[in-house]
Amino acid sequence: MNRTIFSRQDLMDSRPRRRLALALVAVFCFVAPPASGQTPVSGRDQGFVPYSEEPIRYLSDRVNDPVARLQDRIDRGLARLDFEAEHGYLKSLLKQLDVAVSSQTLVFSKSSFQYRKISPQTPRALYYNDNVYVGWVKDGHSLEIASFDPDQGAIFYLLEQQPSDQPAFVRATLDCTQCHVATGTRGVPGVLVRSIYTRPSGTQATYTSSFVSGLESPLKERFGGWYVTGTHGRQTHMGNVFVVDREHPERLDVKAGANLVRLVDRFPTAPYLTPHSDIVAQMVLAHQTQMHNLITLTNFQTRLALHAEAGKKGASGRSSGALSESARRQIERPAEELVRYLLFAAEAPLDDPIAGTSGFSEEFAARGPRDPRGRSLRDFDLQRRLFKYPCSYLIYSEAFDALPEPARDHVYRRLLEVLSGRDQDPAFARLSAPDRQAILEILLATKRGLPDEWKDARLARRDACTSGPKPDAPASRPSR
Image (cartoon, rainbow, N blue to C red; front, top):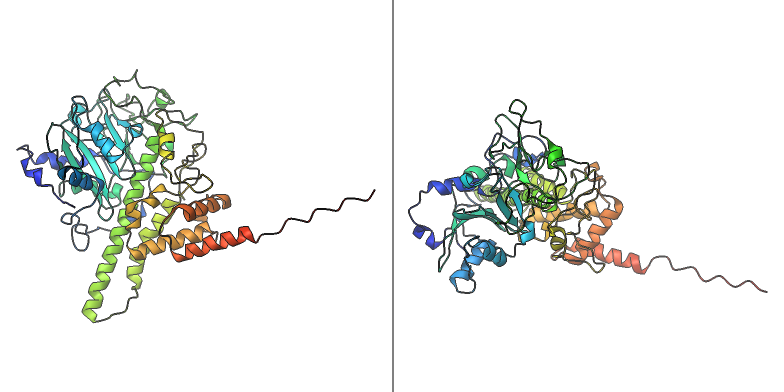
């Protein structure tokens, strides 16, 4: 059963609705001055996206995200959430949603509506998988959740940290979009990771910049307000340290926060599920949040373009299936950006190798899928870039598969052009010929629903392997 607002919402008690209005800052964003720096987002220039109106109906349509599906199983007695004193429903929820504990990252900036309970001594813990983000605050009254619906993007929920025979997720609708539809989410309901200059109190230093992190982000502008465990060589970042110079707040002692492999000397780690805030988990988180937002943007803009086209044709009596030039541009602009982000075209390179501490890298990579040669888009490089085969694993997601046909067709066509080598646009110069060949082979072996032209590419590769040059005949032995 799909839901918009669960039936138990009105039974939660009489706490002010204002709590839901604040819940928007709960997942990843920090309400601060406009982000500057490293994430050029052309989708931000595409204008206001009327997500609450036809045909999107974000605020009124039923949803089918992982949390909505879990609530349905709970209601039907097919699943249950177990409450325990220290963490409430956290452990049980992560298990039900298949979210790895090793994904834990710790943020000490006051970036949640439960900000009073967040500080460098009591950071907020975030956990995630490919479709869900969960936030936990020590002694907090709610779990904070963003769950991605294939069609509607990020759906925001709260789960009260009180024992109940029938725990219920409360969806925050209109209140949430006040913060989670912004330039940092590309104008659609989404999530973001922000890096800020943080005082020892956990608040942002006045008049300082903030950075929205994505794959384009150089390491030196990441992790402000976050704890980070792992090694990264001579590279530096903004994590693990605070503003100490009020006159020059941007002069951080970044060396003091570099290459930490343990946090026990920084704050009491015992209350947390793991003592880590893994640097690799942080890097994947930044990539994934903006990937989710781009998929949602492409979905919304395509649906809006098709809706407008249908209206025009209805008014004029036309029945042609061809798209107008304006509709085609509206669809292809975000779709093209999606292709570039999928292929890590603008990824900030690593200057030194990085390594995590929590086992996240191994657990993430083990989730596959793998081709007959054992290769996966989830395999890490961590020497000069994040992934060994730079194509986002979210190409396997429900949200990607739910892209409306014109956008999905464009993305597939452009991916094949780039990976086959037919497109040598300098924008994809970082993809070497072996990179392209490996990614193409992995997708041909593991990605369901590829268009017919991809099947032709599979046959062409098979023919090339079976009809290649024959080995030379063995040389005759010289006569004695």
